[in-house]
Image 1: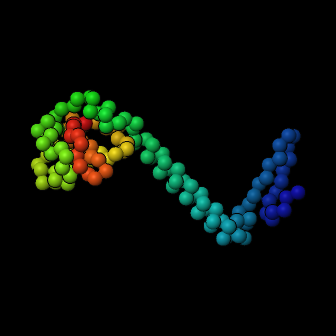
Image 2: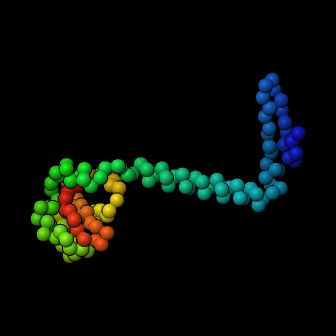
Length: 131
């Protein structure tokens, strides 16, 4: 049988339902607080996963390069290849800049004004392209 104080048991034809009143949790505030904290932390963890999944696409930098998007002045910037990407801080760009590190996923938004710079592990620019 049920050992909880404050619990009532009701029987119907095929089901058994248990109804707890608030006194079960009021008598044990530490357990109630622990349960609330556990539920809260699970909700935060799940919402973080959902947000990350919806904003990241599986497209690669190679796919984006093949699209041949123009409008960010990437052709004029090809002389910077081989240099560290930090040098672009002193350059007046026509639009935003996105630095793509090795094995980085790309967001699904594409902009013809944005300059993408694919870099190696040392930060040296390998490719400059729009998208």
